[in-house]
Image 1 (cartoon, rainbow, N blue to C red):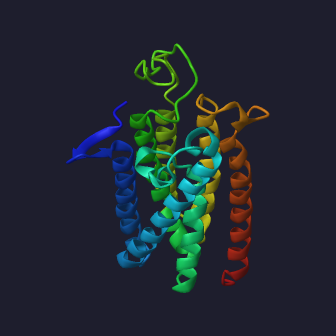
Image 2 (tube, rainbow, N blue to C red; image 1 turned 90 degrees about the vertical axis):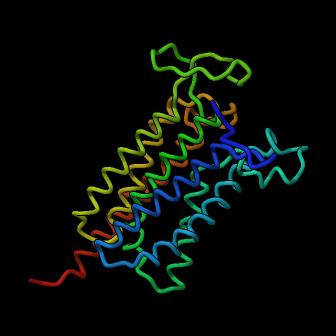
Image 3 (cartoon, rainbow, N blue to C red; image 1 turned 60 degrees about the horizontal axis):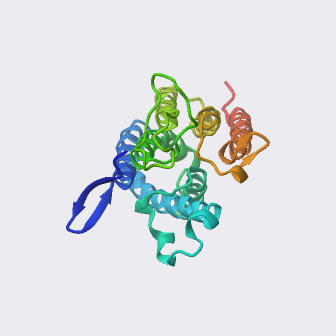
Length: 259
């Protein structure tokens, strides 16, 4: 657990923020390379990525603050609401914010929504790899207690009190890496626009639910009938991915030229 990467004068630069920045850069680089294969300019990807980044940060922070208001923000200076460098982002809020920002930008610019969504989808998974490493360095999103050989031990001052816990951050990072590789390979053989993005929704929902099974940091009121809040949200995400895949596949068959 190393939350502080370095200092700029008296200003601490946290690893969480550094890893988030690296995640965005890695996502932008890989998406730009992927775009060239389908004749989409790098400038378009750079522009939409900026809007996605802003939308995701706003959405992720908004959901975190509203979810953990009583535990972390009630009675604190209001400026803490904006202190994203200390950690505290909810992925699903970020995904929703990015989707809304992306749809608005692509619609206004009259750019192909599903084609660009496919270009970006694998890179979103890659960015999550860096994000989860940031969680590990920050000491958040940890698992429940275990005695497995690969259990990790945070410092005794941590809320786990030094007890060995599941490294759920690493589980999630590895699963997102697998998802990235699978989607990047699938992109080369896709049959219709939107197929890769729909596959991302399905794959992420499944993999996130697996990693969540080992989480141990949720307050009791964030577990519903044995499911964490993220697992509950994964259900409609999975359904949306399946419906989208079916709908886009059907639409592609209807518009395909008759041979």
